[in-house]
Image (cartoon, rainbow, N blue to C red):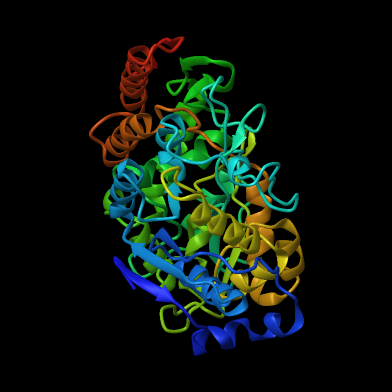
Length: 443
């Protein structure tokens, strides 16, 4: 289903086959009879797993769930319209990490302990860089003094995806990645490595592991209120130089226009030895109807740079709008509690979802078909949120343009980072932040 409302009133036969092994062995949380709920969600690569676990929830509880699965580009507009209406048509909103602060700041979501006093997520559930919390006094997403505003449907991070028939040992460093991708490739039949280079969120997010692993950062210490812009540091320049060098040496010539679907298809079609993609894309590589590398695809933790492993979390948030009746908010909370149980998360994983519990990852990763979970967990434990501040979307827009201009050669790396720094400093200054910037890099 895409961009339409689907009512789940009974367990579908196909889902029954997926869920049966777990459902037969485990008792699921009894949440009682609840009001029907409607969920707004993006139709992303992990949607099939979520739909399957919702089918199981309906079967286990008898409670009705409607899903509005919408293309990514339409989700934000629907969510904004929902919270501004007299009464939201949705009981659960799935909000991208970069959008959350807009909703947190405007007080249009219910903190979860207002729905159920004292509620806290199970200890086994990842907090994904604490982005589910909002500290209004600090104006920052942090569990320290913050309120729990949402729960995770996933904790998306990158992994290094590689072909085990071509790459015996995945590279441990970015230096090794450059060496190995050049050695194994046979362009244009086989490319050694690729990640997104398209303008916007794509190149910004896929550059973040390089930046973080080289010790770079966009801002000095926003958690402490220091918004000095540091994106034009020598460390950031070294990271961008290496990113461009690897992309130019091993990716297709049109890498500056390559989006997520292009990179996924490159690997799935057998035309890449290694790619960097989000873990949510994993099902595309193991589905025999979509992939030519089902038997050889593997996952590894991201390579390390001079400062270690750099991982940027790009997750989603299930939140409850404030403008719904209390009984529907309670029904949404019941679904949250059920969804985060070990039993439900195991079904979610078996159906192609990305589980958010450490114990589920640990147990399933021992099975060959879930070996990728070990790499995902390693990356997740090292993950951070580079854009935990209110100006994140505007900053990402600047970064997405300047990085792309550097990759395609319109700007030198030094020019791109200097221009980005000046524009980001202005964004913070206009917002009244304590800011500044480093001395310009040589251009």
